[in-house]
Length: 389
Image (cartoon, rainbow, N blue to C red; front, side, top):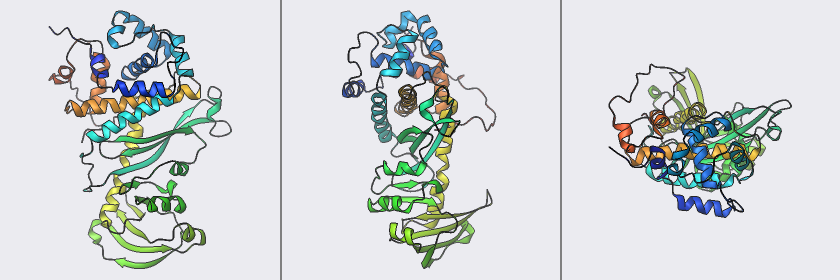
C-alpha cells in the first residue's frame, strides 16, 4: 500500500519555492514573523481555493480537524482564524502577485505550442476586464459608484492555453482603456480588444512598439479609403479596406494607415467592423482572431464559478488582492500540473478530483487514472470547461 506523501504535498511540489522565497524577501514578508510564515499563509489559502472554503472560520475548522497532517502539508505554523486574518491584512499582496507572474511564465512555456483555433505563429492575447461587486459598507475603499462598491480584474489572456499573461486589480472606477497605459506591448504579438479599448493615441503606442491589435470600430468615426482589396463574400467578409483617419484628433493621434474589415456573422446575424494595424494578415484571419476573443469571457465566467474570488475572507484592499492573486496562482499551478503530467481531463474535473483527495496518501497520477472518476454531465450553460478542446 502506498504510504508516501499526501496529494496536497504532491501538488505543492510543483511550486518553485526558491522563487517564492525571493518574492517574500523582496517585500520583507517574514520580517518579525516567528510562527505563521508567508509560505504557511499561501498554503492555507491554496487549500481554501482547492477545497472551496467559504470563510476564515471554514478554513480554520477544516485545517484544525486535520492537525496531524498539517506538517505533511508543509504548514509549520499554528492555524488560527485571527492569525490568518492578520496575515491577509498585513502581508504585502505584491508577494503573491510577483509569485503568480513566476508561475505564469512557467505555464506560458508549457502551452507555447497549443492550438487555439487560428493558424498563426505569433503570440495572441485577449484583453478585457470583469467587475466583482462588493458591499460598499464593508469595502469603503472600493467605491465604484455613489452607492456601490466593486473591484475590476483587468486581464490579458494568452489564448494558447487560456493562461493569464497580465493582471491588474483596480477599484471599480478605473476605465478599462486606462490599462493600456501600464501594459507593455510585446513586439510581433497580436492583442484582441473590444470597443472599450478604442483609443487611437494609446493604440498608436502599440503600433510604434511593433505590436498588432484587432478591435471593433465605433459608429460614426471619420476616415478616408485609400484602397479596397478583393474578398470572398461566401466566407462572411463584406469588404477589406486600407484607410486613414480624417478626424482632427484621431488623425493627429494615429497618423498611419489602418485596415477596416466588414464581416457578417451568420451564426449571430451580426454585422461587425474591425480595425487593425496589420496590413498583411488575411482579412478572414482577422475576423477569426476577434471571434477567439470569446475565450476571455469564458475564462472570467469559469474563475468566478470555480475559484473563491467573489466571497472574500477579509475586507481590506490588501486582503482582497492577496486572495485574488493566490486564486490566480492556484489556477495556473493546476494548469501546469495538467500539462506536466499529461492529463487528458478538463481543468474542472482536475479541481473536483483534487478537492476530495487532498489528504489521501496516493500517487497523484493514480487519482486521475481511475476509470470511474467521470460522472455524466449534461449540456448546461452553467457548466464551463476550460482546456477541454
